[in-house]
Length: 181
Image (cartoon, rainbow, N blue to C red; front, side, top):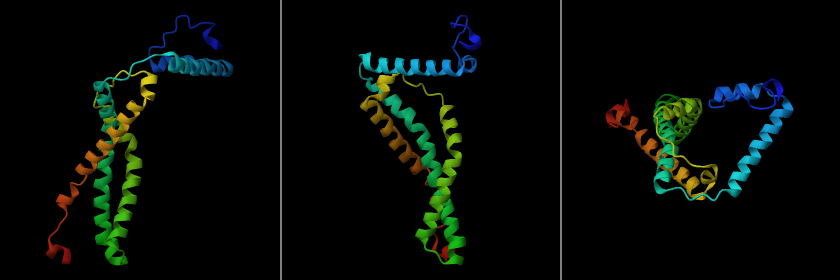
C-alpha cells in the first residue's frame, strides 16, 4: 500500500485527520480497492444484519436533530421575506407601481438568496447546540420509520421557524395614518 506498507500496522484511524493522512498516502489503485471494500462492507451489513426497529426515543431524538436546523431556516426565511417585501412595497413598489403581491414575490426571492448564503452558518449553529445524536446503524437509518421521523422533524422545525420569523410583523406599522404618509 503506497508509502504506508502492506498493512495498517501502527496506523490508528480514530480521527478524521488521521484517516485523511492515511488515504492521501495510498495510490490510485489502492484508493479504488479501499472504496470498493468499504462499499461492499456497507452493503453486506445492510443485507446481513438483522437489526431491530429504532425505539420511539431514538426516533423522537432523530426527528429533533433533523428539525433543529430547519427552525433556523424558517426563521430567517420569513423574517427576511417580510422585511424585504415590505421595503420593496414601500420604496420600489410605490415608484414603479408594482402590486403588493409582486413586492412579496421579490421579497421571497431576496429571502431565498439569503437562505442559500446563510445555510452553512445556520447548520453550523445548529451543530453547536450539542444535541446527542441517537446511535443508529446504517440499516436503521434507511428504514422507512427513521426517514419519516426525519422528514416530520424538518416539517415541524420549519413551521416553528416560520412562526418565529413573523416577528417583523410586530414592528411594522399598521396605522392607517402612517400608511397614508
